[in-house]
Image (cartoon, rainbow, N blue to C red; front, side, top):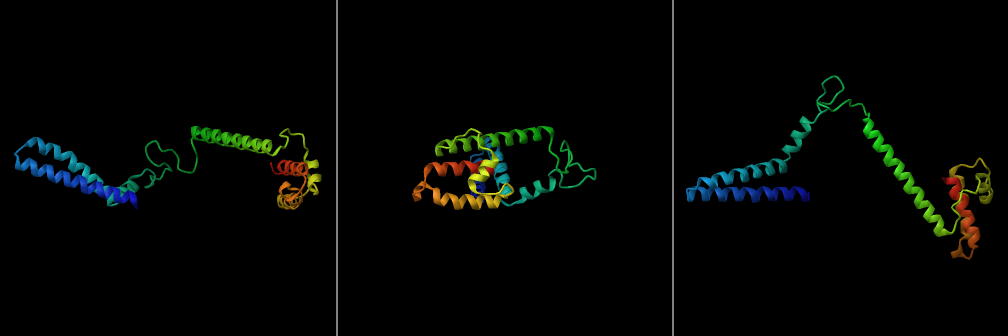
Length: 177
């Protein structure tokens, strides 16, 4: 909405400047001012064309792939339109996902260090299940429920043991990774 008002305002400003320069060129009989008014008029027209929505409609009509050529291609250099990414796009996406995983792992390690949990992978899954008082076939919902129940008693803010709190947190993180 704000962008549309801005473009409409630019349309009015450039239109007014065009009219003023044209009037001056006629009044002063200066052909140079007429040539100055031409680009101003062209800019005013383009701003009007964009603010009226006609530019958006034209782009939508002429966008490659909007009209089917029957061969599954969208236009010059567009390639197949069946949802495949280019090899370069797939590599870029894989690299981005790898960086995101690394960033999440670094954040988890920072949280563990702040909580005082040993970040070494020394805790086995079986031991983590035992710490939470669960069977080894417990699903994710049961793990979460057991963790929340046990953490209420062990949380240091509620008078619990800090070491037990850290042990439960380590077990939960081991099972949810």
